[in-house]
Amino acid sequence: MTAFRLSLNYTRVLSEDGDLTDSSLSTNAIGIDLDFPSSTYVRNHLGLANQWESSGAYSARGFRIDLISFGYPITLVDGAVRLDLEPILTLVRGEIMFINGGHDFLRMESGFGLDLSATYRHWFLSVEPAVDFRYWVYASTGSQTGFGRIFPFRTALGHEF
Image (tube, rainbow, N blue to C red):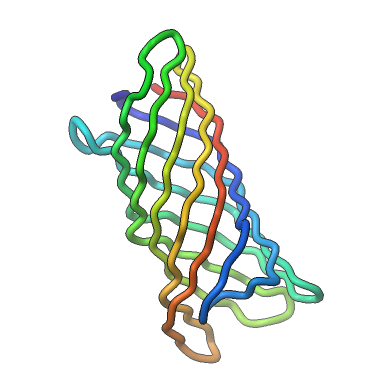
């Protein structure tokens, strides 16, 4: 496992459903992911992204922050091109959103993803389908708990140091 990985990533939410979601939203995010090994087998992930969403006249921009995420990279092929499969557990993700002409809000989520990466000469390309679970939304109008499922798909291009 390498000491540090830095990547530029793009996330697209494919669908969402449940109490705390809106299936009509078009949600995207672009950001960076910083990966640090915490032991011989586990890798910590810190993700910081600019997120935007819209539906009809509604639009919002904000920040998507993966605060506590852990991955366990499993090498599938170790040759000139290395293939890794990494289950990633995100315990705490926060989304701080600013609605155009409206109130700001905070959303909290957790989730699970499966990252497949191909690495060549310390450069890597990865794709990660995931399922996230939204459990809390806080806005100036009040706090709401419930359950929502979000299905994002992330692509990343990065470098290992």
